[in-house]
Length: 372
Image (tube, rainbow, N blue to C red; front, side, top):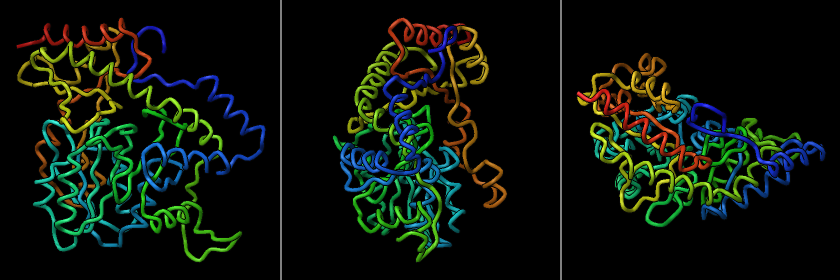
């Protein structure tokens, strides 16, 4: 961890990960190869899926799955409170994102709001396990069955998350992950698709490498979305310690919740009984009526006390110009409210008890100093 301010994330390669990457460099086998194949096998086994397809990013994972599962002009239900890639890859395959509001406690897709937005053209739903907190899986599955919808689960932030004792990476139809450096596990850049549908898995494998079935033979068109073997080697080392890292995140989150739950005006994460949150982010929501400063000024004061904080996300997707200009003005009041209220504070595994105390005390002190 850097000296001074406690950052929102702490990312560094271990000696084992550096050695694994160097071994690949020395081998000369830099493109997707034996490490990539082993990474896929081990990741699929870890989450309980039959297939895993390693790709170059979480965005690539979404693009490939959308291309494989959807048709042009399909409408797809998407929560508006998410990273842009959840929705941006839909127009790339000719589909229209239909933005849905989110639950005010978990910030994940509001299933009943989604239900009201279904039309004869709706073909799929893309729930997001935001911050590592699982969405209402049972509600989404029930809705999908009622309306014959495909499900693509965006688990970019949810490595290690469980729902009813089951890893969310094993739930049909397809699950996509990101291995960006700040995630619960990383490969540098990279992504993964998991599924137990063999036909979908085969399509995804072909799409990531120009649909090449034999050398320089292409029955259809695809992309160049392969993960490098060096990234896969790092991923293999990260996967070995994923459970321990997530367990530490949960312990750190429990400490923060214990010390912040009674702070007036600060709402700690809501976790339903059936969910085992993996805490990619520890995100609180501020009650704007409780303080004489806004969220951004609150973050500035945390910074002055040596604690980093960030906002995920300051603008809901339906208000992004890229979508607003295409789809028109929308009103999704919960997503809009959360964009103004949430902030994330450090929860990563490397924090010790003194640092956690510093984080919790800083939040409590700023809240006390500016409470109305």
